[in-house]
Length: 267
Image (tube, rainbow, N blue to C red; front, side):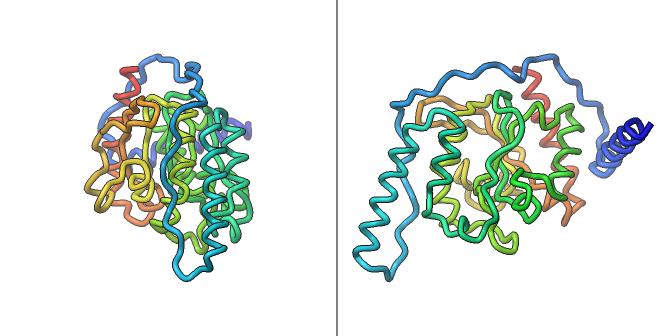
């Protein structure tokens, strides 16, 4: 009885979300396999070419040490062909100060064989505690958003640009984004989804190098070309945390969700 009541409450929450966003039509789900086996990544493919600039006012010996560390990390990253290898490379990377203040790494959640991958910005306090992306308040809203287009965490793959929580849940800096971008791009190459959703401005900036705010770019499809020459259909959308602060923008998110569902139905 308790399980039935829980499911009923979850269903009511989803309906409330759809009312809030002004959903005015049903979203049809075409039967398709979201768990197709992906092609293996060529271990000899070109790795990402950049890390952020070296900070000013440091000793020459420190510069040498930083350059050596970057070179070692890029070499390891180039040889990463599995998610386990990638996670290990991130854990070994000491070039981002956020690692020092975070409780733990927040790597990913969901099904890595899915056709659709969601990339958020950075972990919050609850994510930092549990080590799971989007498990706090914004994650609960994301779950409702996914459910509104017949998806859930078992049928999608979720990660963040930054694997460690910025202090005070602040927005990641451009320097931090640039530091972790090579790891993100390798993450995308290993998973090789057919559809990529960049959640929030920092994610859209890392994935698509957009200029300007997320509201100018959300809902617009483009092709992300990877170093291995493959292309992925990509769309930026609004972050659940932003929607919680600006609920009047939920209708825009609903338009993006319908577009994502339509693109999935074509697979």
